[in-house]
Length: 293
Image (tube, rainbow, N blue to C red; front, top):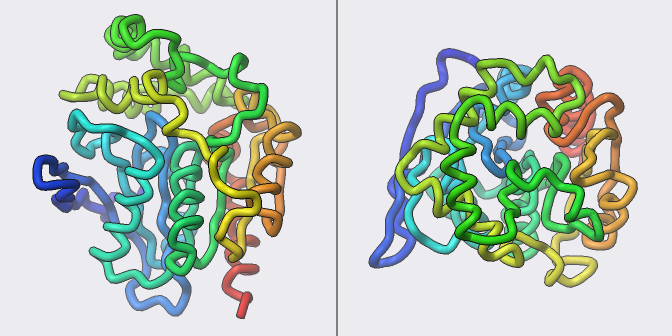
């Protein structure tokens, strides 16, 4: 990631009783004629998980990246975490930055949050690039990495597991199944994912999917959903948690216009796992989007 990007924060007033500091970064070309990009990480992730992607596009695009509330360096209050909350955060950020239209590049839970926003406020989204999105699981839930995705059976057990999980050894073990190229799971990546787990309030956000799994699903949206703009699915072929041959058809019911591209020798974190192939594909997608009237 470019070392010129600095952490910035805004104070999000969620309600009269609750507020949270949200971290974001800005990159790239000011006053670019191209549509701004907003990168959104997945469950457990942070801005830095895009560090092999954002620099490839910063010369031509204005780029924003944000830590979702409860993750990364954003604050972790004791509130109800859900896709609706994350979509509201995205909407708030667009208003803060006076962005009338944006291309959202979202991974996993970040992609699901983008779909939720695009369904409810389609006019705010120029295009969706959904990278191994979560939210529709079919019959694959049992095969998911329970620790990494937070889908533990009991909140009490979950809190005990979180305490045991918040160390580099356990984080490394949980990241391994999400990568095909396991050399990418190095000390730097492991530390990036470990540090937020030790923050005050981490148990509230990290355990939310185990306590209220339906809050993180898109099943209730109509098929097709309200968003009719450009949409693209990019998937790692070796994703055992969300296998593309099962999940892509579900997302194409939700977004019939969505083209799909499967990247070989990559797993759930395809944007980092096979970053060169991913960046090439994203570049082609962005050319298509900007060529759309």
